[in-house]
Image 1 (spheres, rainbow, N blue to C red):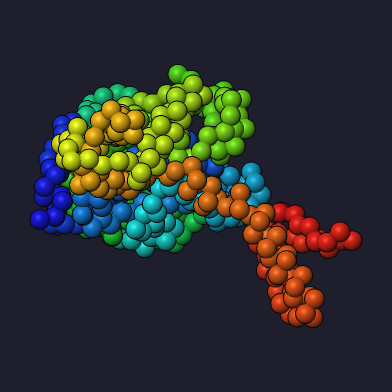
Image 2: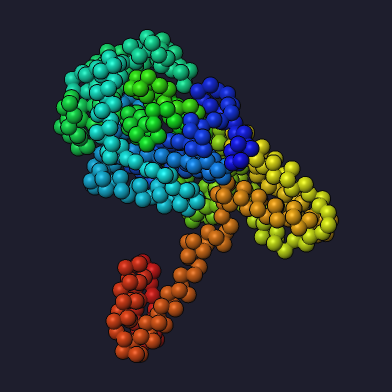
Length: 495
Ligand SMILES: [Zn+2]
């Protein structure tokens, strides 16, 4: 019997505002879509928290034995400056400011995004599609919605007819917003006169002459609306009705509300069975904002180079800190909180390292099977990582008591403890020991490795094997390590 049949998982569904027993559409398979970043800037720490939260979900589902197809998109077009669909495309604007091509901006910040998430030990998604790679699919969906009479063309743009949709369906089902309130709260902005009603949203926007990211369509040259890309990519890879859709809390409205409307309009089916939303991160009790300086970048945590920090913290410590809060709670980030998290992290890692050498006896004072089920219970309760971490510290208490001879454990229990504490700490929570982190970064070993290659090169030169010596020099150069030959031998510089 697979683990997922033995461990009933409850997920808080934003659609029903209730915890519901999780049942996948197809047995043993899970389709999960998470809204990815708009790659026009260095990744925000708050976004990292969201992606770490869904990495926890991904990891736990896999731990339970599900085969998970995790799709997370890259928004590389169509996301305008503000939610009222006004202003410049964020990527195009940054391209203008940095004097680069839009696709250079996309590449630069996609690489940054991947680098940072790798530091946090996030698993990559199964598929990472881009909006610009799915223009054809988006046009097809628009045609379909127009055919259904739920979208209309106006001056080269196409809008979703929210009022018409709401006659037979429910716009506001996810966010709980009422159409009447939406009408009352919508300010009339320039360009909105094209719309039948102010709450209608764009599926396709006509490109003004200065708009450089543009594609041909049946309605003229333009670009897709931001909400549409997620409908196109989620349904293409996961089907018309799939299991889990996640994102940050701020995406609930209008982005996810619009996704539901587009999905229902296209296929007549609710696209998603479980909607999950991760809460935000504050810094020193206040909202993070670049403009006020109350902001911190992930890499500043790893280097300690920030006025908000007293020192550097390993990515795993920052990850551990974030997982000490439930993904649906607001979490406040501060130097003191990170210091406390680091102490806890070190205590946990020390206990895990001590496990192998733990003495065994004929009886156990620690009921490992019961404890293990409590770890599962925590995760089965809407991925409650803080309760799981509390259980890990319960085990740490016992490990330390056994170490000092105050308690005993049998060989069998000890083996079960090693297996499960490793599984929960490293596979499910995705933590790494500090030495694992260092070894992966290679920082500490790099000098001795380069010196080893310098010695091999000297030997090759002594043997007049210049082909090998040049090869070593050139390949190191390609990796950004420059060798300098001088009277005292060879030294190196890492670029
Ligand atoms: Zn999205």
